[in-house]
Image 1 (cartoon, rainbow, N blue to C red):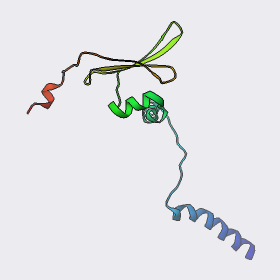
Image 2: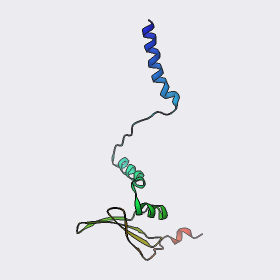
Image 3: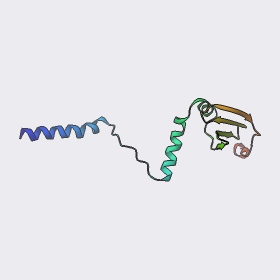
Image 4: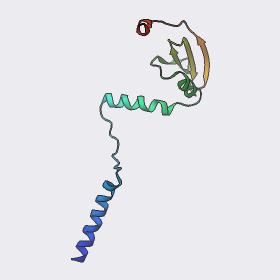
Length: 113
């Protein structure tokens, strides 16, 4: 009887301890195309490094990113239309080129009152 009581007490301690701790770990489960897309977007910032990270910290996220593989060289071009800037990075996230482009004022009506 003591043996069963001791086993039951141990099982209750292991079962109740995580509930009392307030933090229960659930393993991540990503299913579906939409969920994978959201996870990639959330992890995008964590994977940035070097000059890409500095540009992201200064100007923020841009959906206008193009990855080009031409003649064996991989480059990535980020365009910020509202700031009028375009950045080109090499495959190691180093800034290769920065140049100004014409600023697009397509959304001026949003700021008018």
